[in-house]
Structures are given as structure tokens and as C-alpha cells.
Length: 270
Image (cartoon, rainbow, N blue to C red; front, side, top):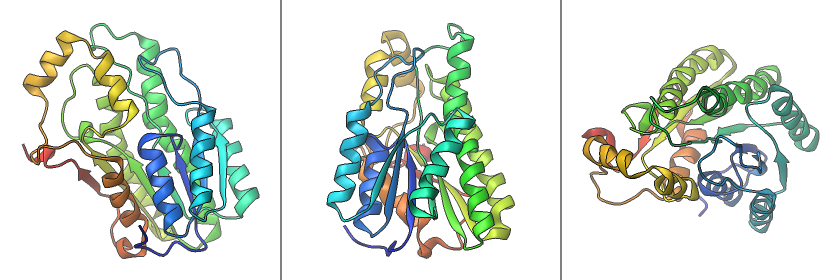
């Protein structure tokens, strides 16, 4: 669906092989952007569900090309500074510019905080928070040097506002994403770069399915008792989040920066 004009612009999307990331890629492609689709394409040992692979990333690239985009697939670990620098350099070698960064890569291994091991805590914070900083650091530096503005959209969550039993480490990271977003918005404003976050509730993706399958009966009961419900009574679809991401990255939102935008069917209203 074409709503915005991203012709001549390049969108760099992490966690792009499937789910929300793939949806964002396809919507940008449909609206004229060229694409850098980045994903780690492997499942870390700390994960309690399977992540996407190289075949899914290649499929995302092909789908973007079918929508008229020039698309580049990049296998990249957002928590590795050298990997991120190489990925950004590849994008700049290919396109010469990055206009939009969508910091979407994330992991959510399931564990109660008392049972959580240090390695899983570190891995979760590294991907969900450190990874967003690293990508924003390198892409943001390019935007600042180029001097033509830009947009960064980070994926937080309703877990950036409320508790998520069984996902305390993920919740801590997503709260941190909102703080990172606000600070980046202040620091990059002088370069005409806007920085915002989307905060979805549960989205109908393989990641959500993996979390549900691995959360366990005890944590499921706690979550049911204390977790927020969607007021509108339906699970959010990836395309709903993409609509918010494209608006935040568009010229229509040029005076919107430093916010966390819930795409949550009213979950944060409870």
C-alpha cells in the first residue's frame, strides 16, 4: 500500500528476516525506498525458541525486490560492534546513504528472574538495548556527517511501560530502549534526525509464538493474572506496527521526536 514517498531514500531494517522486520521492509519497499535487510540468521544458545535463518532473510530480500526496491541482505549481529560497523559500511558502499534506521532486532528468552542465568541476562540486554545503541551510533554518525537529516525508529514494547512476568530481563531492556530513544532524540536534533520508538503489545509473529510455547505453565498463570489485555480484543498484526513505523519515518512526522508510540490495542490504557 503506497501512502508515503520514500523514493530515493534507503531504509536499513534490523531483524528483517521475518515477523515485524519483514513487514517493515515490505512496506518501505512498496512506498519507494531501497532496502538494507539485516538479520543474525542464527539461534543463540540462550534462546528458548528458534530464530530465523539465511533462507528467510533471502526471501525477505526477494519480496522487497518484487515490490520494486533495490535490496541488500546483510547477515549481522547487532550486539557485535565490529559486525554493525561492517554492516553499515556495506550498506553505504551499496547505496551511498542511509535515510531511515529501523532498530527492530530483538530476542526474548523466557525465564523467571530468580531462575535466570547471567549469560541469558547479558545476551538479552546486548541484543535488545546495546544493539540498538550500536546501530544508532554508526548510522547516526553517518546521518550527522551527511547533513541531510534522517529518522531512527526503535522497537520498544508495552514491556517498556509495564511488567512482563517471565520476561523481566526483556522488560528491563525495553524500558531502557525508551530512555535511549529520548536521549538520542535530544542529541541528534541538531542534525535534523528524529528518533522515536514504537511500543507494540503482543504481535502475531513467530517470535510471539516461540515465547508462548516456552513460557511454561507457572509463568503463564502469573502473566494471565497480572499482564495487560488488549482493550480492542485482538492481537496486533505486524502490518499495524509497520504503519506506525512508516509514519514516524515519514515527512509527515518531521516534528515528532523522542516519543514512544504504543501500537497496543489499548493495552497501556489498563
